[in-house]
Length: 244
Image 1: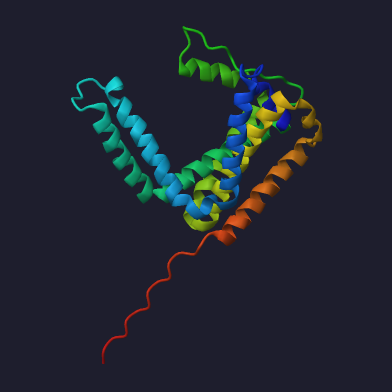
Image 2: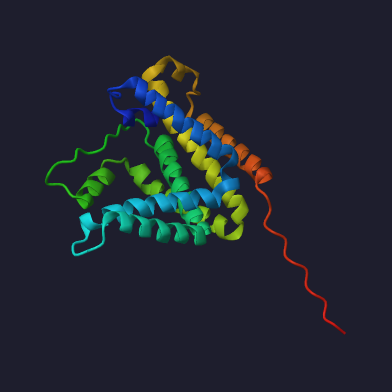
């Protein structure tokens, strides 16, 4: 599975030192999310909503004509609206995000296990291409076994993530941040190692099944740690006895 990510990295960054510093920072953030992300889940989701609302409000006049408000005012309004919405709908965003990450890794795992000897490279974007045509060419370039199994694997992973969030929200939150943290560590760490220390890739297990099992084991381990560290919800107040 790791080998399938290497061709997507390209030829390397122009400034290797800066790239490695950024990748190291992402790995540190991923480590924190892997271990304690669930404990501060609502705060993190709210901050992401505030940041997204700020950017959306700031650039809204660039996309919608006829808005007479200034960009700073719209940025503040966007931060308030998106922040409150993210705080209130915390479980919704956790479910969608967990399902999306599980679907992405399921798709990658399907490709790694089912592509055989087929090679894949994304189509080149040109001036006459739109999103629909790009997606069509991207899909047609995949092997038949991948296109047959991939949608089912991704769909089941997406539904599983959402269902887990509905049924067991605490477990889903711990699993979400464990997956998010390990994803950041694997992607950023792999990119930094492949450019700065490519010989270290020899320590990575060669078999795809072993890589998947190792990744899944680390995700489960991180989720268990967060399960223990995350405080339980506030206890329900005892019912007041009726006066006789």
